Length: 237
View 1 (tube, rainbow, N blue to C red):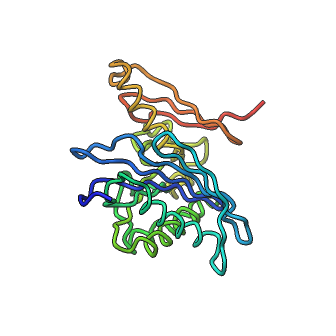
View 2: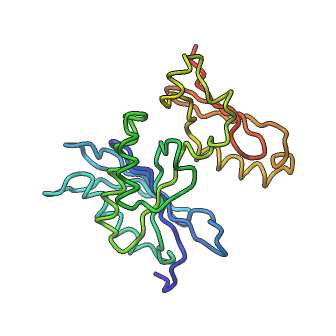
């Protein structure tokens, strides 16, 4: 590995999967991925497998866990993969996708114990994702103890959403208690808008653009000036 500290490991930790990518950093700009991959089968009792790609070559393998949990076995294999992949710059941080930052976290932050305690209190707002995102931070902090861990929030992209679009048609007393629309998939929308700006100058102006994330609960978001202005769920028909 190179001697300089000039790459970031991005991580998306789920209940049974772990996606990762290594991005070079030059002049404070994040470049394209040099290494990408995904572990599957990380649930308790699962059979973990790894798919990864580097230099245009794709690879697949099953992992032997031994006495380790599937998640610990995946982290150990990731450490070896990072060490054995030629040409990778030295990592300087691990960046984690975290679904919910609540009203207070609207920018990436270092995942200190105080920050993690606040994020754990938001788990009820995203119970299927938030606990696994935070468990991933704790696990990587142990496995990569020398690297700072940072949290990047899906909800942060939508922090500029107007009050009208942030509110549900519910009594005002519930709004005062914090019941509101936060918006999700923000990191994906942020990536889309960055690509649009590279393709068209109109994406930087006030011309609205609409993005959509598919899945079990498809979501769509309207963007103005590169930030979210409305977000919602579109039910399947």
